[in-house]
Image (cartoon, rainbow, N blue to C red; front, side):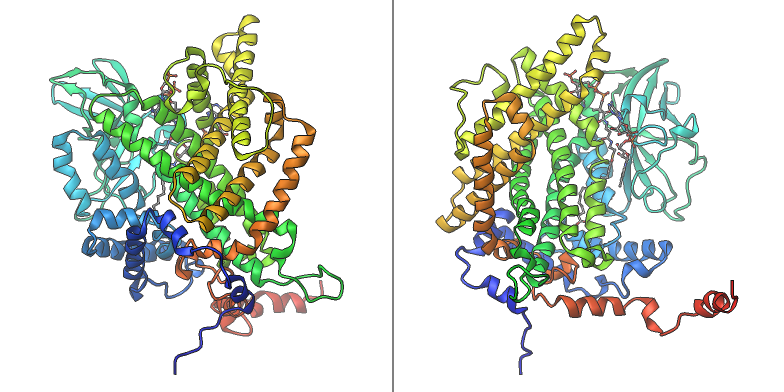
Length: 634
Ligand SMILES: CC(C)(COP(=O)(O)OP(=O)(O)OC[C@H]1O[C@@H](n2cnc3c(N)ncnc32)[C@H](O)[C@@H]1OP(=O)(O)O)[C@@H](O)C(=O)NCCC(=O)NCCSC(=O)CCCCCCCCCCCCCCC(=O)O
Ligand SMILES: Cc1cc2nc3c(=O)[nH]c(=O)nc-3n(C[C@H](O)[C@H](O)[C@H](O)COP(=O)(O)OP(=O)(O)OC[C@H]3O[C@@H](n4cnc5c(N)ncnc54)[C@H](O)[C@@H]3O)c2cc1C
């Protein structure tokens, strides 16, 4: 007799009469029906392997045991990738895209940097010969690499890195050295115990001249014993300059000194997708739990309502739900720009490089910071149970908030965006993705609160805030301030302008995707509601920018507020169906609060029972410490 599959009655009711085809949204997010099939096959291939499951919850292991257990699973995962019917590279991309790795490697993947930075650095910076020598070895996992750039004393300011690579024309070798404690490479993932090679970013010195930071391939450990090579602590020998610019002893400048930063640009593009995947998990957990959880009294005397029926809860969860679609579509646009720009760069055409740098910095900073804020709101929306480690919110939050710092600390990236915007606006040239900055915004300044009208408001804010920042810079200049002081004293305005530009890109991506997309009417309706909700939400959150740069009035704002709460009520009935469309398996969500069947309380109880402290009624520490205290009559 087939076991009756439990489904929480409230969730069951939420799923009845769904007005749209969930699979259509799943396919949209996956990039098509075929991609969904591939993803599901990969999920089955990975998640069905009993050896990839944790014998005990990771939180109860020691630091060293956690490392060993994650390394065991990571190595097994790599074997599965290599044996994957879909091929190693497509499977890896699918694994990363689906956020599957973190479903298996809950404390972090000791081999992630090998795939996310080491191999991309070889592919993006290595010469043909170097790629022939190392890429196959790296793909075959005959070497494990990392990307060692950050030092104890420098992470942001790459021109300040202290690690030196001095070219010796006699031996035609580079001598790498860490001249001081602050020069020690610090933070690179896998560097401590796992990697035996690294791409090391160092200042290249040749003929007594510093030619700036360049990537070097360095062997860190013996391939057999894994012992660190002699002198590895503060002196490295025999590194090889990747994409060598040393030709017969002479340094040949690259066409653009920032091409050595290319790996970071790639990862910033990847991070946008990764934080969106994590946000989808958090929103799914919080939404399902909010429809299972009944609490308090809405109508006196009535049954306790689902907490999702409180407008306050909808205000917490529906904007992040909408954001998952907005960020996914923007990340897709950025990924396409990345590919176009990269193909052009390979042909020597660098025209799109500034756009790619500006946009990748903008979107990485925006998506990571917004996702971190939204994940925290999702956690808080689940009350005490959201605080538990098993809810998975602490881990998801740790992953998205790290992205606010790594791959370029967000403030620093915002200032990079501002530099690009000011230059584009002042020079009235270039700026593929900021064409609105070239020439004047045409048309009347009257405000209409249609979708198109709201997008125009975002454009006015984006160009207006750049002009405000430029006015500040010019004012400081007129007072005789040096450009670097004027820049520093305008930082607040510059960052606001950069953020407004990033939000405009996300808003336009969302609106344009709905215009272009071949969507059924029911899907278009619900996604249009989410789009309108999200762009009004952001406008209300930052209304000051719009008051400053457009003719927005108090009446307009009150009208938009009313529209916003109407949209909350309109979308509320579809919240569970929308998160179901993400098609995230329970093993990927890894949270008793977010499981598909809504059997929350039993699963919470089962999780608690796994704690070592719950394996006996009285822990041994009672007899050692508490009992003597109780008897001590202090
Ligand atoms: C850019 C800097 C801040 C400043 O650099 P400079 O000082 O050299 O430049 P200037 O500011 O003077 O500008 C001069 C000029 O150059 C232009 N410029 C600058 N950068 C670029 C660039 N990249 N490309 C093109 N052009 C550039 C700039 O616009 C100016 O132009 P104009 O003169 O015309 O105005 C620089 O110092 C910098 O980048 N700092 C940040 C350092 C950084 O980013 N470090 C990162 C280290 S690596 C790291 O942190 C790794 C983190 C871990 C990564 C893991 C990612 C995981 C992602 C998800 C994967 C999931 C896989 C698993 C899935 C699962 O498990 O489920
Ligand atoms: C989880 C994690 C994984 C990492 N993995 C790697 C890795 O694999 N490889 C690697 O090389 N690195 C790695 N890093 C390091 C990471 O890249 C750096 O921490 C990051 O680039 C920030 O640099 P920083 O630590 O020097 O911060 P700092 O720049 O020192 O930041 C401190 C403060 O100074 C401010 N600040 C700095 N410069 C400016 C400026 N010009 N204008 C205004 N404010 C400024 C910042 O905004 C910030 O508020 C990792 C970091 C983390 C957290």
